[in-house]
Image 1 (tube, rainbow, N blue to C red):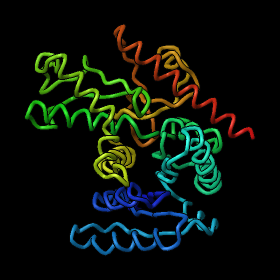
Image 2 (cartoon, rainbow, N blue to C red):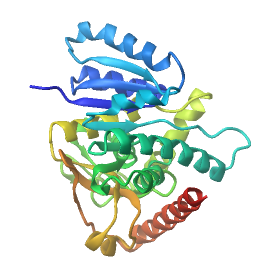
Image 3 (cartoon, rainbow, N blue to C red):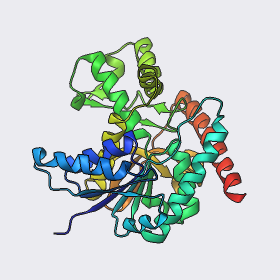
Image 4 (cartoon, rainbow, N blue to C red):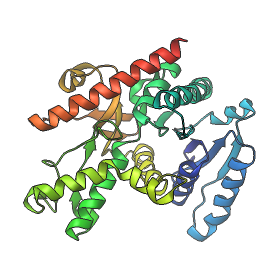
Length: 322
C-alpha cells in the first residue's frame, strides 16, 4: 500500500518537532520545506537518522524554498501543514505582523494551488484562524479542506491544567475550548468533566476561573520561561493528532479553526470566517461542525471573539487588495 505524503512548510521549532512526531507515528513520508538554505535538509536528515531506534520506516526529506521551484515537491501531498511565518519583533505592531504573515501565507497558498490543490491543509502560522482565512482567499481551496490550529492546542492545555488540579489522568478529563486562539478563547466549563463528573462539582468556581485564565495565557507563560522562543512540543503534538485523524480517518472531534457558512453560520452568528469550533476531522478534512448552545456569559465571550476575528479578516482583505 502506498504511504501517505505529508508536507510541512516551515522548518522552525514547531515544523521540525512536528516532522519528528509524524515520522515516529509512521503517518507517512514527511517532506520538510523552509526558505533558509540547509535548515530543512539538515533537520530532515537528523530526524531520519533517528528513526531506526523507533522502528519507524517513514522517509523524511528537506527542500529549500529560496528556490521556489522546489515547491514542486508538494505534488501528491495528502496533507500539508503550514507553520511558516514571522514572530512578532520589538517595535512591530500586530497589524505589521499580520501584514507580513499574510504576505508569507499568500506565497505558500499560490504554490499549494499550483502543485497540490487537492491536499488537506492545516494552518499553524499565527494567528491561525486569520491565516487560514488568508490561505483560503488566495488558494481557492474548498474551505472544508482547510483547518487552523488553535482549539486542539488550547483544549490540550485546558485538559492538562484540570488534570494537574485534580490529580487524575488526563485521559479521564474531557474538556474543550473554542473561539479565537488567544485572550478571546472560550473554554466550556459546562461541557467539562473528569470521568464523567462535571468539573464544577469538583473544583470551586474561583479556582476554575484561575485555570481558565492560565489556559488563555498558556502560550505566554511558556514564552516568559523561554525568553527567546515560544512553545513547540505541545503545538507539534496537537497538530499530529489532527493529521492522524485525517490520514487514518479516525473521525475524532477536535476543536479547530473551521469555516463558518450556511446553517452553522446562522447558529454561531458569523459567516465566511474561520474560527475555532468543535468539528469532526476525517479523511475529507472538516466533515461536520457541531452546534453548541451558549449560556448568557458564554455568548458574551463568543460575540467578543467573533468581533475580533471578523475585524482581522477585514484587514486581510485590505492587504490582499493592495
